[in-house]
Image (cartoon, helix red, strand yellow):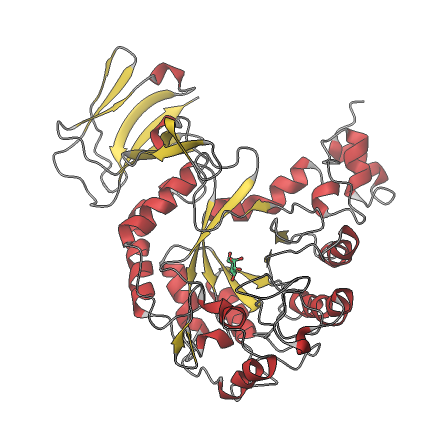
Amino acid sequence: MQLTRRTFTTGLSTLLAAPAVLAQIEGEHIDTANRHPVPAVQDTETTAQHEARLAWWREARFGMFIHWGLYSIPAGTWNGQQIPGIGEWIMNRASIPVADYKALAQQFNPTGFSAEAIVSLAKNAGMKYIVITSKHHDGFAMFHSKADPFNIVTATPFKRDPLQELAHECRRQGIKLGFYYSQDQDWTAPGGAAYKTGDHQPPTYHWDKAQDGDFATYLRTKAIPQMKELLTQYGEFPAVIWFDTPTKDMTPELAGEIVALLNQHPRLIWNNRLGGGYKGDTETPEQYIPAQGYPGRDWESCMTMNDTWGYKSYDTNFKSTETLVRNLIDIASKGGNYLLNIGPDSHGVVPPAEVERLQQVGQWLAVNGAAIHGTLPTLFGAEAGSFSDTEKDKNGKPKFIPEWKWRSTTTPNRIYLSLFEWPADGVFRLPEISRVPRTITGAHLLADPARKPLKLSRTGDTLEVHLPPQAPDAIASVVVLETKA
Ligand code: GLC
C-alpha cells in the first residue's frame, strides 16, 4: 500500500507528534542550512504545513504598519531643536537621558485614539492585517505589561491598553493583528542594546549609565516575559511578530530561548530580523522594492508615507496616492506584501494626510482589488525594468532601472495587466505571447461591471489588446485576460 501522508500520520500520529520526524520520514525538504540550538518552525514543518501557515498572509498582499509611542510627544523636536532622522529614534539621536525620556509617560494621554477608526481605516484601504509597535527601541510598552512598569497602562494617565482595543476591533472587523517588538534594542532598560548614532561610543553605544547592564539579563527579565504576555494576552492574536534590529548580542543560544517561546504558537508568522542566525518566514526590505523580489522566499516591503515611522510634526513630505498604488501593484507583481505605515500623533490621531491617502488607495482597490489580493507574481518580468549596462548601484552592482509602463499579476485562470500608461493608438501590445504557458480566451476591463469583451488580435508573436479611448483610472487601469491552462 502506498504510504500517503494521511495513512502514515493516522497510523502513527501519536508517535510522530513532531512534524520534524514526519517530514524527515516522508523526505520533505527541511532547511538544515542553519543549525539552530532550538529548531524553529521553519526547520521542522513540512512544505505543506509551511504553505498552510503562510496562506492568509500571501493572500493579503497589503497591511498597515503602525508606529506609535512616547516619541509622538516630542514629535521630532527636543529642547527646541528639530532632531534629524526618523521620529521614533529621537531618544537616541538627541541623547536624551533615560530619566528625562521616561518622564514623558506622565503626560501621555492619547484620548483621541480610536481602535474602531484605525481598523476601519485599514479595512477600507484594502489592508488585511495590522502590525503595531508593541515596544519600540525606547523600551516603552504600548500594552499592559506586568513584566515592566514602563508601559501605557501603568505609567501614564491614559491607563488603557490600545493593543487590547485593537485586538477586539480587528476580531470584530475580520482583520489580522500583529505586533512589532524590538527584542534587542532597548534604550531605557539596563542591558538593552543600542545602535550607534552621533558620537555614542563602543562597545555599548549607550549615552546614559542607566542603560548599562547585562544583555542576557535584559532579555530574560524584560523582553522574553513581555513576548510571553504579547503571545498570551490577546486571544488568537498576534498573527505576526515583527522583530527588529538584531545586534551581535543576540547569540544563537539567546535567540533560541525566544524561538522556544515562538514554537508554542505554531501558526505565528515572524520575520527575518530576530537575529542569532534565524531567518524566519519573511524578508523585510525597508523603504524600497527589490528589483525582482525574492524568488522562492516570502517578503514584505515596509514603507512610510512620508519620511518617518514615528510621528514628526513637521514631516509633510508625503508620497502621492499614485506612488502608493503603483508601489502596491509593483510589489504584488513580484510576489511580495506591502506594509504601509501610519504614525499617530500624541493624541492618538492619524495625520489627515495619511488618512486621505489610505482612503484613495482603498477606492482604487475597491474596483481593482482582484488584481492584488490572492494573486501570484507576473508570468513576464521584463515589464519591471532592466539592469543598466553602464550605471552601478551603491553596492557596485549593475543598477536596476525600473520601467513604469505596466505590471502583471496572475491567478489560476486570469492574467491581470495593470496599465500605468494608456496606449495612444488604443492598442496594448504583449510580446512573446507564445511563451505564456496559458491559452488566452478573452479580455475585459476589470473596472467594467458589464465585462464587455475587448477585441484581441495577434501580429506575429505579439498579442494585441484593443482598448477604449478613455482609461478607466488615472493611476492604473487593469485589463483582465481570461486564460485556461
Ligand atoms: C528601522 C528602524 C525602526 C523602524 C523599522 C521599521 O529598523 O530602526 O525605527 O521601526 O526600521 O522597519
